[in-house]
Length: 173
Image (cartoon, helix red, strand yellow):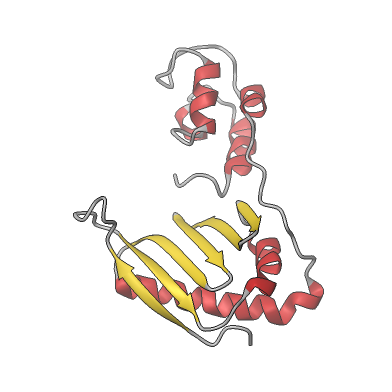
C-alpha cells in the first residue's frame, strides 16, 4: 500500500460563492509520485507533467488532478460525494501500485484531436445547422471545447463515433 490516507478540504469557488457545486483538495499522507505514470497508463490521463509530477484526468464529468502529495477534484455535489470520490481514488492508487509490475508506465497525456483532424470528419457542407457559419468554424469550436459531435446534425454515425472517441476525456457532455 502506497497511500494510507489523506486530509480533505471542501469548499465553493471564491470566484462563485453561490455555485451549487463544490471542489475538494485532499492532502495525501504519502508521496505517490512513483505511481503517477502507472495511474496515467491505466486511466488515460489527458495531461501528464513531470515537474512537478501531476496527471490530469477528465472522468465522469469531473476534472481531477493527481499530484505527488495532493488530489484535487471538481465539480462535486457535496462533501459526501467528495468522500466517495476520494476513497475511490485512494483505492485506485493502491490497486495500480500493487499491479505496477504488469503495467507499462506512461509519461504522456492523451493527444487532443487537432482542428484538421476534426474537420476531416465533418461533412463540409457548411449547412449552418450547428449554428456556426462554416464547418471550419464549428471545428474550431470543438477544439476549444465549446461544442461536440452531437451538435453537428449532418455528421455521419461513423464519424460521430470517431470524433466522440477522439474527444473522450476532454469533454463533459
